[in-house]
Length: 232
Image (cartoon, rainbow, N blue to C red; front, side, top):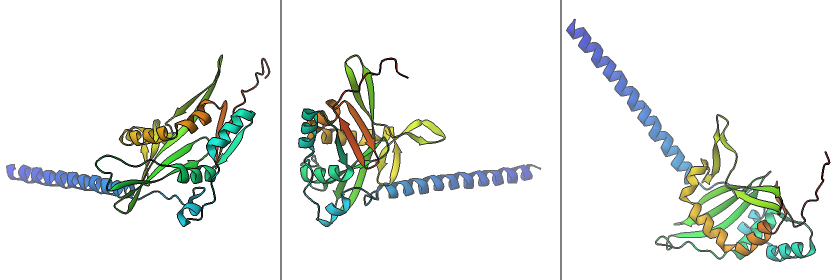
């Protein structure tokens, strides 16, 4: 009887060992797949201006700073296409990746993808001849107040998954969409990038009364919205 109990215990222990081994293997395989797709740059071929930049046949870009100043001075709206922004970024960007990795890691390009109510800012790097991409999703929120319209930029891209509505999408590491908390790893790089374009950010987001992000288009309007009183 004792021998049977011992054999039964050994079989159960063997089964549990195999089960935990399988679970551990699946976890490792999953992590390996995630790392692989993070190391693969996201597809940028759908971006406005990408084909021109990649082939070296880009047209002379629109001067966005001049366009914003004229719109504010003339009190009229300005529409910037995804292509306008990306071609201008290609010409204007002077930032370089510094620090100890500066000899191996270079900032290649910065791109913007415009969607319905959301923009994706993408940093493309060259690491030892291999392209890597990181990105964050940005939404603009505006509120009417006693002193006019206030504008806030949020790092928010909607729910990460339908089953986890409170977990928000932050951006992409390579081809992998990551939760917002993961952006802490790369947020400093995006802040440095924003500092490079302080004048344009001040003109386009602080001095514009109305901002709307649409598919392939950014609409900026300096005119304050007209009060409708008790209209319904």
